[in-house]
Length: 457
Image (tube, rainbow, N blue to C red):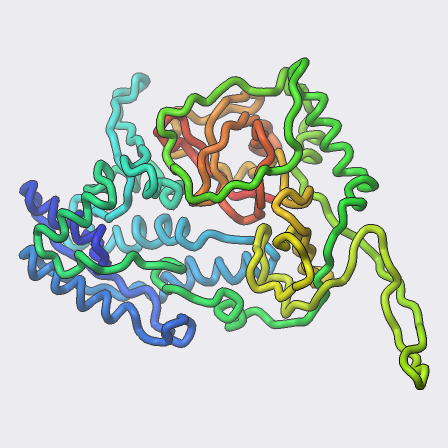
């Protein structure tokens, strides 16, 4: 049992012991640097103390393993590298693939384990393949509609799933809390962990500045007029219109709604596609999946100010945009970000719509329905497409309807997956907010998670 000191893994261990399994606990330390956390102390020490008390209470052996070297190399270094390129990685997904169900799993097997259990809110089922009668492992949404954590496990393989157990996937969070309290587990009242997996709650720019250089640059607000003149944006909108079935129309920007919604499929129907025949070439699909880029030039002019007519310089008005602030490095920002911009004087919230690490510019737009926040299509490169169910792998030239999410706390979205030799394209029924390169797009059929891929751009 991967025992973290939290209530979920504690109850998972307790239930396994109650069911008659031979359970031993392993606590892994993956991070040493307390200076990078907001609390400035070693949170893992408290977690280990609680985990040991839980193991003692349940009556199971407790072991400690230090995987900080592998975690830094396989998760944190990857994270720094992705941010340096202006992309937005998901370290929690990498942590599960590279650490919990690889490095940690290998140590557990050496200790004599047959399976590794975690406190994830998801379920696992075993089928028999109709082709060769081998076991096929399915990973299903957790029963709790607000706690499903399949997204974080989207990169697991059949081999990893064969050794995995998820004892609380059939429970809701309140039920887990109740069991912990009734069993008098020391973690019963412990708050859920937040922040980066095993690092803790951090100020992300401060954390990234450990390795990424801080360089000042301009924050540019993009006005609506830019899109009326941008050839790519106009082509994409015309192409979406051309794909629609006769008589249908779509909103072209995301209608704002908070994402604290039901995460599971909850029996919602996939629905028919609003698109007819998607007869687009690979080149056209590439162009449809590319985000709009911004190249707004600002000219300066001199003027005289004050009683002494001191000569000063200012930017001329530009119909397409305006320099509204300064930042400390474009790599520290991500698409859809609202906090930490330091921009005032706007009636509506301001969001990051693009970053350019080459020019060190951050582009922003005002309002939840700003055109720069919305996209219909994304691409996953061929080498980045991962199928959990290899027996359901799509072939080039094949289209399928699935429900997809592009970040953890997002309700599932209906979409058409289009497999080509050049990659996998995901065309959503409705525009999506804040698609970010480096994040994972994950697709589901009903309550089963089938695969995932890294968003290319």
